[in-house]
Image (tube, rainbow, N blue to C red):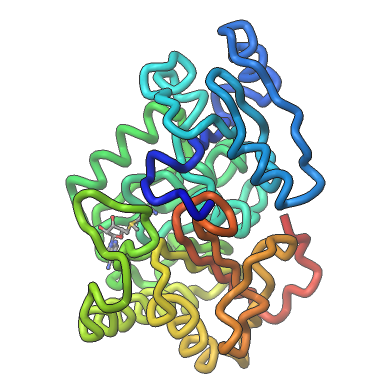
Length: 315
Ligand code: SAM
């Protein structure tokens, strides 16, 4: 993992879209197209990392943690593959697949994706609930919303109402949102976890001014607090592709202090080895992903759960 500096060096992750296919169908198609499935060692996290680092050309395996994810060797270009073109496989980094699983939305439920475009996580939730439910997907950027609408069409995500709107203007008391039980909060962030982004190199806390990070954090706090105001919400999952505590642990700890009478912080992906930074009180509840621990982009996930709901089954 130490040698991985470029995004191109990370394994290629592809999510199986249950709205268009199944694990078995995708594997049959890959196998008949000349791909070789590698069993590998899926019991132990470190061995799994070795397996995926050593995948050879035309080999692939299933992910150790997420049941709907496949892993291909670094540098594999699947963009033109018929499975991708038809929306049966979605090219999506493993880290960005965590929030939909942590959300664990029940089929038939009402969900909000507060910062949804270009729709990777929205379409992932649709896949997990098999379009059985209702998702209000908001984004304030019209161009990105159009990208999301395209992705939703390709993936067959039909249970979404996509709206170009600032989530902060969405009234929690409006009757349309009375039954919303699950909310994803994946707001704009510094993107500092993205391995070597060519368009925006932000490698360290010093590369981005403290003021800019603090202003991002203020915005992230406002979005997260707004999500926690919806009257029936049971679970709110907060995520960023930032490595900075300012946008991660500090945002969540500050908001938790204000809502701890109503919400608990529950362990996001409890079996995952890399937790939050240890100097923060609720570090063990948070989950971080990194090139080093996961062979993914840097990512952070936290999960709030309303206090009455003690019987919730973690995914
Ligand atoms: N969840 C998306 C996915 O998985 O494809 C990625 C979301 S991206 C990290 C953050 C998004 O938040 C951007 O598309 C941005 O336009 C949107 N955004 C920022 N502020 C917003 C607000 N106040 N209300 C709604 N969307 C907002």
